[in-house]
Image (tube, rainbow, N blue to C red; front, side, top):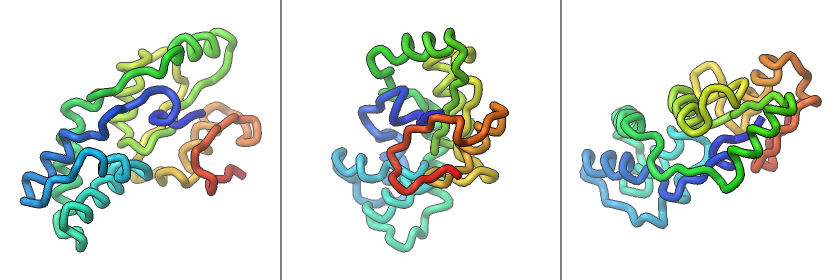
Length: 171
């Protein structure tokens, strides 16, 4: 099981188009591109909150509307500037050929995570894709990886889940 953003693809610019639309709509100050790397992590909702605070809405007065607009804009092209890490498709195919069950856990909204995975790798490589939803807490909570392990019919200690969160622990 692995994080979609950290392992299987690289995104050179963080939803810059979507965020620009959010900032424009509410008359907030445009942010320099280098700020966008600090908005990432902990899911789309946190990205929107960080952007709004940085752009001049510290009380998050426009959060609900901005969140809906961000998702609408992101859904138009969730593949913007995404590409594989070199050798990743071949590695995943080899693992699959060897019978390894593969899963993705992402803080992207679930529908977007599924779209990205299927477009980048097809629908036959991964056995499970888990994105952000109301029923599964986003990472670093262990809910997604634990749910995938359950789907696979294996114990969490039988999974390999390399993480970039030092505070995420699977039981």
